[in-house]
Image (spheres, rainbow, N blue to C red):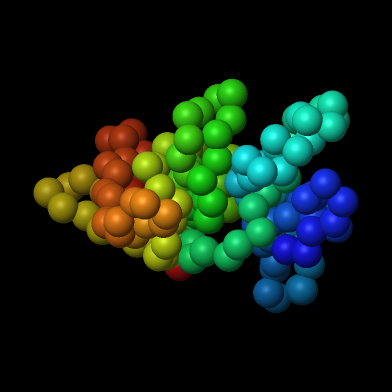
Length: 153
């Protein structure tokens, strides 16, 4: 991303979005910022006294997984917010509306596309993470038993 004055990007946010397109009609169904505001941008805005409370999204592309009801996508950058310590989120969005319906903090940013599998009647999401001083690994998250088991479409 090209930087302008004070190290801020020269384009206005959002810097990264999740967009759903109806491929039959070509219509955009929703477009939502994906990811928290990167730390460097947040720090510059705070230093300049600019209050920006909305998510700006993150400008790197990572793989996603689509189920019957969800889009699962991890953050591409590490961030620190008042809501969470330094880390990256694995986020679940409602497939019809783009509303974020859940997230879990990961120790590093997503570096590979999420996948899902079932074992002993329980569904899991697994994602590759790595970056900076964090060596690469796979992390698996179990879905709650109340969740409807879905398959990729």
